[in-house]
Image (cartoon, rainbow, N blue to C red):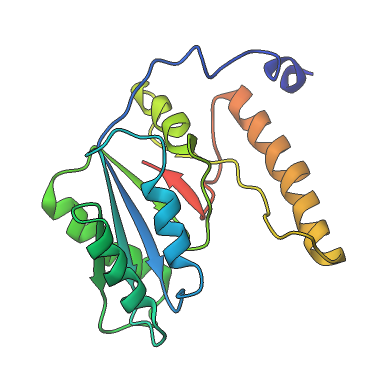
Length: 190
């Protein structure tokens, strides 16, 4: 019952605007079919100019991922950075750690967003996520992720239904309790 009443409140306008300098870490391995679009969408988000950097951490891709990212690095100077791991295949955690070491060494970012290479953000998604970091009791924010395959077969529709019911309901309940048990691997802001 609490979960239902919680949804009636407008939580978005009650939180102060907070737009920290944000480094986006995108681990990528053989993502040439999606990484260009992902970068374009991230760059076009509604976020202050100069407050966003995108680090694509290439896990020794064997396709044209490095070429796509390097082209975007030229297209968006100072916004997109290609971070190459020569020794790949050690998993997402190693890839993320490689990128995070570089970002932390630069000492530029006030927040770090970790996303998957195939995540598509709405224009205001980062703005909505970042405002929660203004609260000193909030250490991380996760996004509401929807399955985006359209139109789909039975399996993709089932996955979409699972996202809507299980993820949304459990996240709402956790929000009411003031806790979060697990951050979505595809989109988390720290």
